[in-house]
Image (cartoon, rainbow, N blue to C red; front, side, top):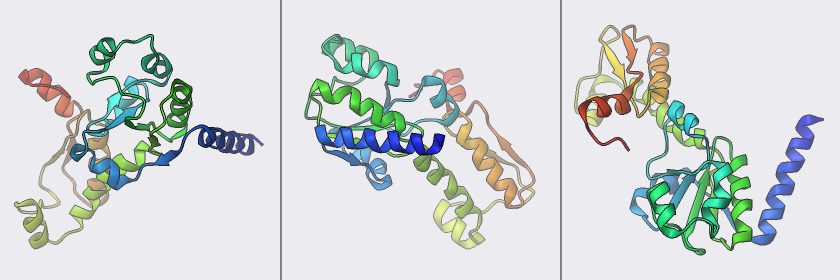
Length: 208
């Protein structure tokens, strides 16, 4: 019964949103191509601690769900918005993409700003699909023969006893990559838990 009610609420939420604005669903290909489309803004509405454990999609900014309505309302000026989130405050017709873990909070965020006049809205159904797709490439790479691996990555394919260290932004995806490698029989695998964030901080580099 709980599952049925939850699904029914999800459908009602979508239908309510569609009546007020045309909501599109973003694809992996669109998200992957965002660096070439600065006119599109990707907004991750998860909590900051969630991003710390999983990493974030490149070009995205973080506005937690409970901040969304106020952030896009007249309560926050353009100057304040840019100071808080690092980008210019979107105009009513700017192309906005919302993402979260499963898509549910993205739709809630969209419903928060539709009454404020925003209408060019898209959401990513599941941020984990994007992140896990990238991690899954580790498995594909480790299945390659030595010659093909060298052609693609310009180095010899590691042997099963070679030391391999995985890193990402914060360590979450690196752990998944390391687990995949172990599953392929690699025996000397490590996860750099601090990953790029720790390294950049200690080296005095910019952490994005």
